[in-house]
Length: 380
Image (tube, rainbow, N blue to C red; front, side, top):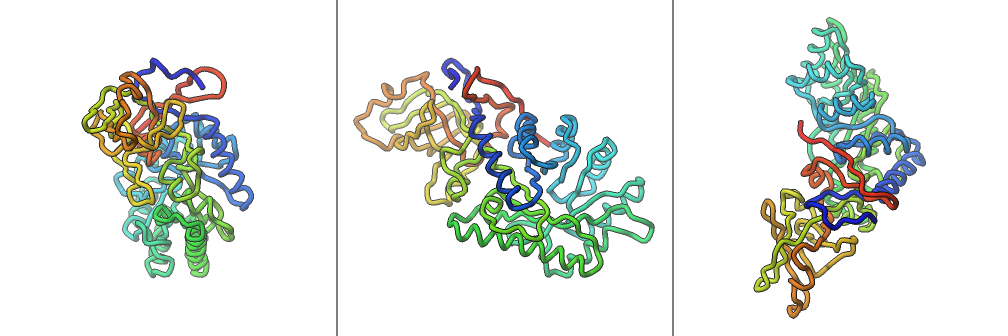
């Protein structure tokens, strides 16, 4: 492992070997199930990471912002699904990207949005490609497979004056899987996601609509699905790094988590049993996703600089720039001696996407060679 002492912290560390194993695991699973894999790049927002996903066999990307689509187009990625329901204020940006050579697919879930998108396409001599978002678990948004609205949205993607938007298919995200942890429950959720999205596609086809794309995905369901019959592509994002929430769900082991935050001890409160670091919630984010799981890690799991757990240090409190680690072990331990000022610790994040968003790059740990720097971007 490269020498980490002397580095300014907090610093976002990425274990390249673990990441590569995570990429290979997901891609080989999708290949075995016979579906196209379209990774969600919102997790990394990093060209170096996405290049490795594409090299492993990914085809196209999923984005959560048009800025992501724009930045990756500049890196040579020419196919993207914008997996957030499009609104009129973003139509022109989407059109600009399409005219620059991006094969961009948009998402709608209402008649109003579909009609507006079609009108925009007609006005500008362009045919927007669109998927209808399907609600398969009541978790967030989308149209239920049996809702009359489904056929109404599909019909609204074209008008009598010509085609300004065409229906490409259906898409769903089983976000409800994040609340599960039993293997059998995850398998059931993956099947529910698949079957309900496929049912929506079949209903559209029965009504005379073309529906070539059936897109499903979340990291837990992608890794739990036993069959993807009727599905054409899968999307997943956090699998590339994994995190404590994914470990709590049961789809990865702790030693598969590729991301951590290097921090430095800056003080102590012996009377309270506290060790103070320079990584508060501005470094870790305020995401407390493990709070509802079997084990609540607070703002993250504390490890030594080599990545080994220190279970007696609980990251219970955080200010913007201060992490407050509570010692839960032997009260006779001299914390200032065991964790002296200037010593380093590593914090494993609850949510890789949220923690990654706090930094402008990764310090990449390689089995050979010095620490590398991979830039990432943020914002909208």
